[in-house]
Picture (cartoon, rainbow, N blue to C red):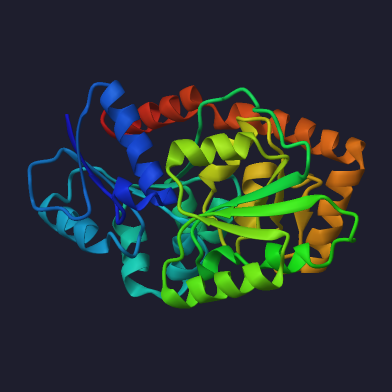
Length: 316
């Protein structure tokens, strides 16, 4: 069987969506399917389409559904789909209706969908191979952020939080990722000058970013919206606990009772959690135990099995 895999971002963008598409391609090929991955569908023969992003991939979704109304179409929803586009964008809403199955990447995802759509919705957590923790810095307490500088990621709340820590704190915040426009880069440069504990390290390759996360005491995830952040899987799989904004996509990954949440955009609350993580060993241990309990959800074999099961469900 031949599958057309449509993604708005190809691997060279180092985006979360690109990593999602790469994993699906790898798992589908390992299951014996032929997979063509592209940013648009050119009409080449395909028995099934998997499309990532309801709004951006809508042209391919609509074309495939029009030409092959009897063939299965799987739509994977991103964070901007779930928490923005499907509420107001006609293309994104049409994609939901055209899809035979909808995939969300964490357990709170179905809550955002109309009840009529939930019957064809499946939760498939993203995954990352487990890695041994790396030695942490001894001279300072590293909290890292891994993600592009985008409004949706609320990248500067950690910088503001760093200024609220006591003078004796050894916390250092390192941000890995590209600025996607000149305005964000300008704010980042100003923030580095204003907040000496906050360091923008710029873009890094995926492998280097994973090693950096594993060598950090904490991962920070301050996002305004997340579909199901793969960086959470990578941190948990490396034994690095997470401090995250309490937004549905993060709660769907880490669980409702996780102790490491702070209100969205609340630098004071984030600074308090950073201080506790640095100064209260019992608190950091609690976060690590809670992350370890979620780790089985993010195992590659679990994601691969769920993808195979979904395809078999549609092509008995």
